[in-house]
Image 1 (cartoon, helix red, strand yellow):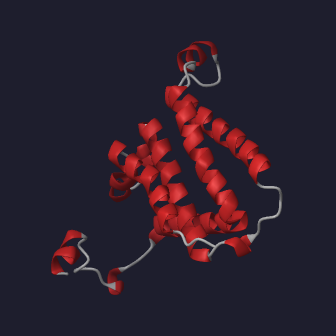
Image 2: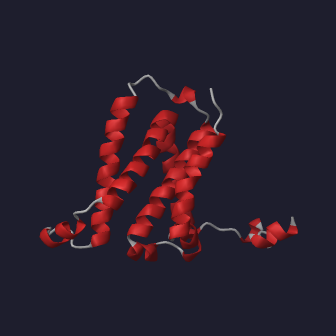
Length: 174
């Protein structure tokens, strides 16, 4: 147990020197917004959203026209911005198409637990943040250094992409 505490530096943690600060309050607000969003979606639409993230990331990765768009588009010459726009567009389109095809308005929050939907939403947010920060490393300057290690490198992106699949394995079947 002592090795685990030392590995995460939890042995020196105390609530007396704990303060949120403006960044922590903003992070807490983002966390609450994410939870409210995924809880309003429900489990089925959250899973559709997860699938849409995977589809959008693959489509963005294989999109062959970024060079042409950079040369012929006056709005965005920045490759990272074009990749993020392609990812966001592919996500929105695939979410709408999958949502229309799979969900016909008969699913509700009664189908999943609060914890499973919340965890899936948090993992999705981490995955999207890791994708964006890997596509646009210039935006990493806005993220605190202690967070960058967990979301802004190739290995972190792999683990964030793997985490939802692990959560799906352990979800309770109805």
